[in-house]
Amino acid sequence: MPFTDRVFSGIKPSGDLHLGNYLGAIRRFVPLQNDFECIYCVVDMHAITVWQDPADLKRWTYEIAAAYIAAGVDPTAHIIFNQSQVAEHAELAWIFNCVARMGWMSRMTQFKDKAGKNSENVSLGLFAYPSLMAADILLYKATHVPVGDDQKQHLELSRDIAAKFNHDFAPSIAANGFEEAYFPLPEPVITGPATRVMSLRDGTKKMSKSESGSDMATIYLMDDAETIARKIKKAKSDADALPSEEKGLENRPEAANLVGIYAALSDKSVAEVLAEYGGQGFGAFKPALADLAVSVLATQADEMRRLVADPAQIETILRSGADRAREIAAKTMLEVRDIVGFIR
Image (cartoon, rainbow, N blue to C red; front, side, top):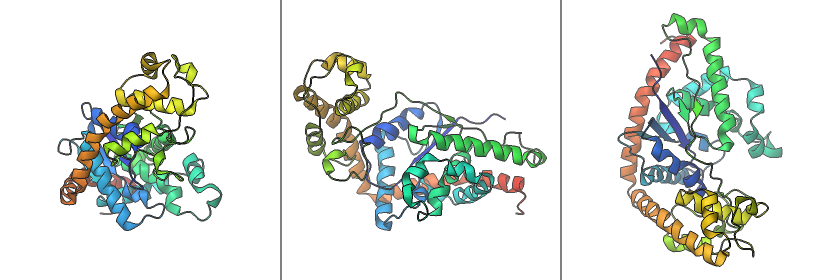
């Protein structure tokens, strides 16, 4: 029986959502609903690999769920839930901890980046969480995963874990009446040109939930229209006019960032934006970008604020989503327990 085309993705509740989260992930989730069965998770178990204040964790979980819905994800046709409500994620992650190899985990560049010189003192969860990510995806036998550049290595690890599980347990998989490849090898799904949103104060650094030094560096999804416009108009730029071709943005990180944001918000290419604004200065371009950002983001922000103000509604959606996710997860884990040899 062929696998159902299914998308799984999630966002970690570890800070206030910002423009980079929206353009890089949330906005891209919406059109996938037309072609895939979609499961969108708030991965709160991943969040606690580093310390989170419990009150903030709850608030950010509500905020991410609200962002999914406000962007246009349909929680009745698809599934929105928070990870910790489905215990099978943790159970499959443990089995995958026993399938994955230490060398695989040690090569994960994101762990090295986050741990830095402090690797002896970070949590075991931070080291092992790629196997939890693999469990998130494979628990639902997802065939496709929308990923950014920083997660491609983890998706490849998920494929390696799936392949090794299928190989190691091949006789048991066959004995239990399943196809040879019990777990699919999930593929990345590309929904358009990658949008890498950088800080409004330093075009060489990614826009961050915890940008140090200035709140003006980051556009948050809950910002009101006035705040969005002010942050863009005060964004760092340079004295030169915009070029007419993309090559002219080389070595101009702030200009490239603002043009890239305009392109993403308008669903245009950078070349199309420069064809329209090439030769003009930032005195003309920034107000145009501010107007565009407000027109796209203000409605999203208003709906998010409305939803967050009614946590009971979000909790109902998350519980319903978790119930539906658990039906799929429970079936997978019954089969995996049989394959592994656990008595039930």
